[in-house]
Amino acid sequence: MTLKNDIAALELRITQEEEKRDAWRIAGPEEKYLEAYSMVEALELQLERKLLQHSAGSAT
Image 1 (cartoon, helix red, strand yellow):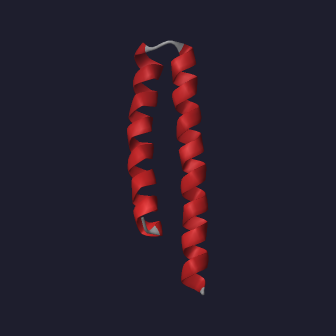
Image 2: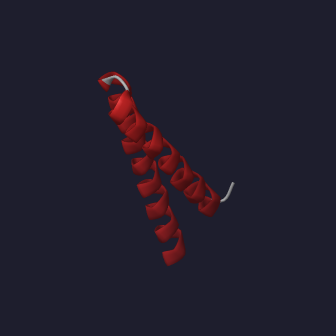
């Protein structure tokens, strides 16, 4: 998988996990919401690292 594909996949997964998080916030137990919130945070961190990697590769 290329770096651009990795980035696109992470962006899609973040969107999906945000939807789950928001659903848990409205209707679910707090534990499930916090779990989903943590997942979104972790995926956003991965995306940030990939974007930095991408910009570093573009600069060379």
